Length: 307
Image (cartoon, rainbow, N blue to C red; front, side, top):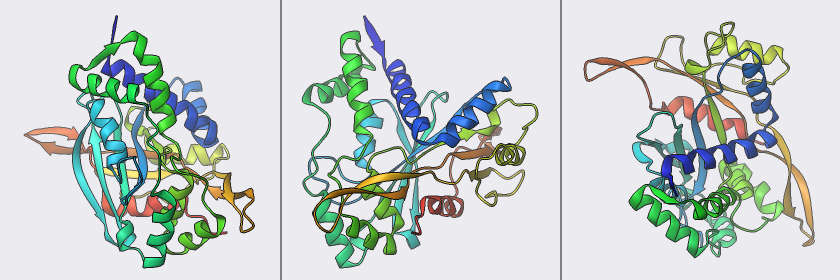
């Protein structure tokens, strides 16, 4: 029996979502509240962060995620530059619009101060590729035929799920703290690697009568005790409005100055919320599917760790 690419993608996205809501309690609370009101939990996009530098046997930068998305029929749609933050990004879409968009960014490591480049490169240069040869062959078959033998699917989904984690070793605490001074993105990615950076609620399809838009949803989440971003990005009625919860803090593994392993508190992820407006395309009104640089820049800051 053959399992389609779409079915495999659904399994993978569900596995990543389940992992994410275990770590980001605010997302689970949102989902529980929406479900209790008879609404729908639909995600607009998922974001990942990468390092554009040699990462051992793992493809570098956006390619670390792109080659998997490619096998699952996602295609690149738009490119973005965030000059001040030394970031580039691409957003990908699936031909079947039931699947969320994927936003993958990369830190241009070569634009950091030389000492920061050295710290990052030394830590990630020997990274292993965390997919087996069998999984790679299955990905190639999936890319070519858009289906896979049922017997291979369980292992492939398991390996892909595990791929979305930190692929390199535990970083040194002092390196993380130094990097955080010049790029909180660098520190975050060194700690969390390929882990999901955030999921995003698609407010347009939420279908909760009491929460008809982004503002009422954010107000309801705040009333439920979820710490929220202090403002909404974008104007009411514009082609894109975004906000988010605050990021959760986790105890992350680090190597201390004496060589022992310990834990320190650090930000992980937030849950984003997006409401999209209509634009004219080919003579018809369609929901805007892209991203706006200034708004994305502000949302990057939601994972900033100050202490």
